[in-house]
Image (cartoon, rainbow, N blue to C red):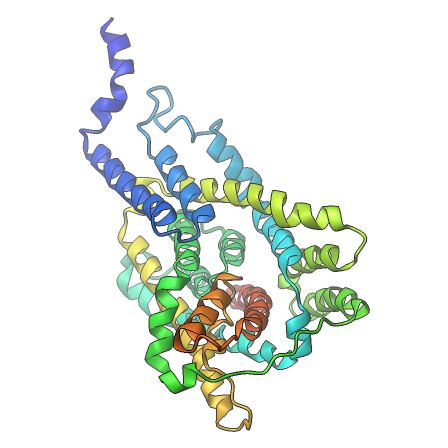
Length: 397
């Protein structure tokens, strides 16, 4: 009987141990994510599964295995991680879904927007260099391990693009399992908090007059031939110029080709809805499962989160400042807020920028231009991720 009681109440007893207090702290963090998802509606499709996955991963361990029943060799969260993150399947499927949602017509009608997508990747490389300097100082355990420092700096830098799948792709490529929790949580949390993070940065770098600049747009789609050729050409070009970006660019462009070909409407709708929803649920739960207390409640977690936030701010600022720089030479001025939409958080960032413009002037509609820059940023972050992998691989070699 005492043995039975011990097994029955082992979970309750665990909460009163030192490890149990860490578990309670993780429950608080999970509750905060769920609160933001439900109460504030900050990308609930992402934050709610992440929060709930965190709860499952931090439940008291089973006596026989010493880990929560959802984890371990046979736990369903471990199965999902091995099947979707460790082999990079979930990021690929997400990009197929995103590609099926994207209309590249606005970008093709005004190709100059591609420069905003490129400029907004400034934070990736700035934070990469900053991380190289700070990681050895703030994380003494990494001193002397130049390989780890380079790999960790590359994954942290990608967080700035607000591109969760690419961040996971880079982190997994460099086998950063011990840092997967803070990296993935930072990437998806900041992507969800675009409406909170970007407006203060934009307002700090622009005047009200700049935010009220109007931009002409003529709503006209490109020809079907152009829209079909575009994803094919981009895939080939990216595969030749930045081979490491081919899996992500290829999946994004394949999803877009399904959308634009005109003969796969059912598959296009499935990719945009059922596939996107299903993979988002599984991805969120899996990310949450990495937030085990012993791996998350560490000093390096705070460093990763802080540097990831810095990267996000740098990316936003880089896009805005680039737009302001262009306005020095352009007759038809660009609304500098468009530059902030050059990050990869599609379509959150473009919506935020459009709402800010409407707040300053209810008759100023810049959604299409913001969407063009946002789409360009989606491509830019993938190519930047491939470039970072290639660069770091060369340095490691």
